[in-house]
Length: 365
Image (tube, rainbow, N blue to C red; front, side, top):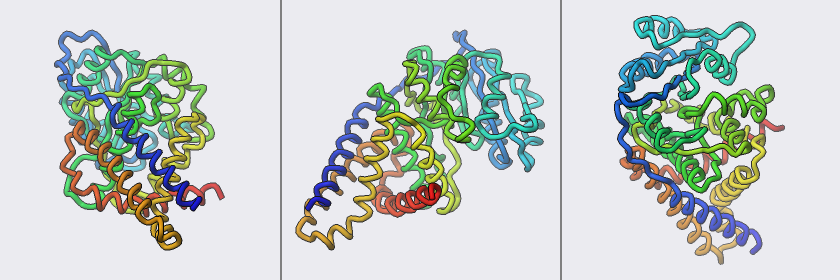
């Protein structure tokens, strides 16, 4: 009976939290101008390593931006690529004077170091950070700057999803999973306690970057540039906002194999113990206990057959809460066409979660 009670409490608490966060997602429908009346300037920082298939697409996306060339620049930082990424980047940006190409010096490597190197060479105080395997729309920069003009903030997070291709199960799975994470992030920004953001789509001031270096354990943890930046901003009582405008959305490449998907989730989960923020860690614990309880639910049905209807009821409640979150955030990303996959994806989520937990545990043993 105690086990059943613990499961019920965790799942009900989780469902209430998710529904609350869903209600706090702010929708921004502003249509960004072309920037002719803008005076703010921005530097876009893009570190890359071995992104040969993706760089040409992103370079062309940024060449087609509607924001006036004199107000922005793109800094491409080659982090010791061993494929043709550097050659492609250099050859494609030679005709674009506001694109800069940098190569990381010997002895320095990793995304954090590449970001720092790019920021060091940036001309402007406002920065936008994008991953090299992403795609952006023609009004991406204009949307970020229009949002900043309306909602001034030291740090602005943006939506990230995978771009739609053929609707294979693995691709839709990752897309809905990323949208759920984006929804939790947007909702947490909405309640004034940001808990999640993605380094694939961030805008912040150079001053904020400098001030938050003390909160980023660069030596111990190579990744996590996005979360530690956000956490540092929170600890410094800076202004943080979440931009849900579709034009500012970033679309990243989906993983190609199930093994890569699990490995990605292991990397994300492994660094969560270093965040040092009670609400983030409590939420992570609640999510872990809830998903573990759902994964083991067949065992609970067998051991406690008399409580099956309670267990079934809370599972339905959790599924409804997850669907509400996805319905809200997928509409902002113009990806509600993926929602018919919700039930198979939600059922497939628990084995992925369990394997990720096993992988994280193995890392610490």
